[in-house]
Image (tube, rainbow over all chains, first blue to last red; front, side, top):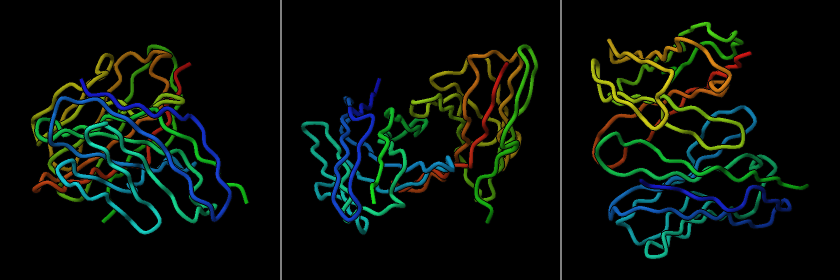
Length: 115
Length: 114
């Protein structure tokens, strides 16, 4: 079974600085998706960024970028120019292709942004 | 489009009571999911459906039942509520179209069983 591990329960960053959240996963599949979701206090799950395993190029979305290391099964999220609105729980998630297409989530990292 | 809607937002149940969590999507998505999120944890899949009339168990299905009679609705039934079912429940949906099928989440239902 696939597993997702986030080893940092909490992280903090100063406003305007850069922070990196870590994620590792375990799978025997060669083709899959990886995601980072943001969950603010409102509880709404918001997709931040996605990466397709067959693409070597790291995904970027404005201030958010990933470092995808397929051989190491590592998928970290970098947030540049951190803003107060970035404060939230961040979840790394894995999805295999086919079947249920379900998401497998890590336990999350709580990000605090200090003014 | 309203997206994925869930009712109720909050509910307190007594042990042994039953209830149905409602989920509706207006995006004509064929895949629908129920997840639960326990405190300090990620989401875990309870049940899913790949289309009307088709449902299957996820990772933590015990104590729950689902049905999918229409494309839009995917209710989750708790028959005999137990304290272990205290959690936040999320419904999600996606449309299987090629490789890019994002899951859209509802706002969640916070359930407490006392």
